[in-house]
Amino acid sequence: MKKKTLYDLKNIKGKIALVRVDFNVPLENGKVKNNARILAALPTIEYLLKKDAKIVLFSHLGRIKSEEDKRSKSLKAVASEFAKISLHPITFIEKTRGLELEQAINNMENRSILMIENTRFEDVKNGEIVNYESKNDPKLGKYWASLGDFFVNDAFGTAHRSHASNVGIAKHINESVVGFLIEKEIKFLHDAISNPKRPFIALLGGAKVSDKINVIDALAKKADKVIIGTAMCYTFHLAMGKKIGKSLAEPEKIDLAKDLMNKYPHKLIIASDSICTPEYKDVKGKAYEDIPDNLMGLDIGPKTIKMIKKELKGAKTIIWNGPFGVTEFKNYQAGSKAIADELINLKDAITIIGGGDSAAMAIEMGIEDKISHISTGGGSSMEFLEGKELPGIAAINDK
Ligand code: AMP
Image (cartoon, rainbow, N blue to C red):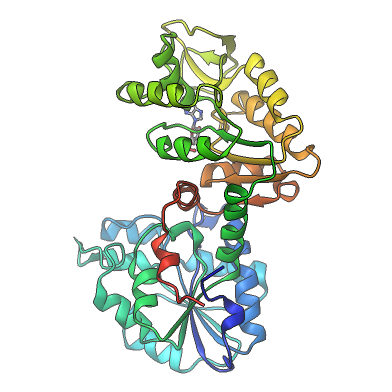
């Protein structure tokens, strides 16, 4: 790691650590539905507390496009969940700037934690969209930087964005480091693609090919096989002249799909059969290879499952991004469950699951402890795998 890490910080007793975390967690009826992202940030927070620092936490939550959005997107509920699972008291300030916030920070004791309000509240002022946070307004980054002594970026989920609360603060503060979560994410993703144990298999599912074209290309260069399943595969089926019925696809990407198949004829493997239903509903479906006009595919079928199991035998590195069916529906989880089962039983393999939806799926299937690494960042992990520089990490001091 060529960026400074927590271990490079010296004499931080009593110092104010500005810590950007990714507490962008799902809420249901005002309560945190899944606290995985909070848990993932705890090692960094525990380390800073042990070193007697004072911690000011920054995070966004959802998107803020109006004053109305602010009502349902306060970080207050997240602060309560944090206190519950970490057992550390936390002070929540319903502000993103101003005297009250500054006084609260000045009054902090060593080993205490304060969380400011959703950083994206800075995107709307008096009902007007100003995007101070999301467009990295230099005045805001400078102001936030002025509140502390050093900056720790541990928000991997937003590292692919240049915002005031990551890049802005890093640019305007004396010292900046990455936290343990970012360090771990980079280590796993970097090792997996730069020096993979082989066979190296990539599994790409999810909804949209357009999101993942560059990833398919980047992974096909490095992996031994790239397996494309569920909605992602229908654009490829169109390119092959197969019938896809009403399944989700991107006809405007057919040429791209053809190019990829021509470029990597022996590496790209496209799912063949699908479990289909007339409507996008959680009802039992039937397997087809050529999908009739009135049906849509919502999961991979038994033939594809068998093929994937065969490819995974003996694999040593597996990167899996995107569910292989509509896993929100009980009737369309079989494909992803079969893959999960195969992954957790592989011997001596590095298994990495990436992306928001995939991480949630892994947790729901209860396999999170049996996977080498579950990435907390969908977009970030994809951009990293594409070989792009992540601005939130690039802005951190080099060693
Ligand atoms: P992504 O964000 O690209 O990883 O896509 C994840 C989403 O893809 C999940 O919400 C799945 O329900 C959805 N998905 C997976 N397979 C299908 C399918 N065959 N048809 C429609 N949506 C799908």
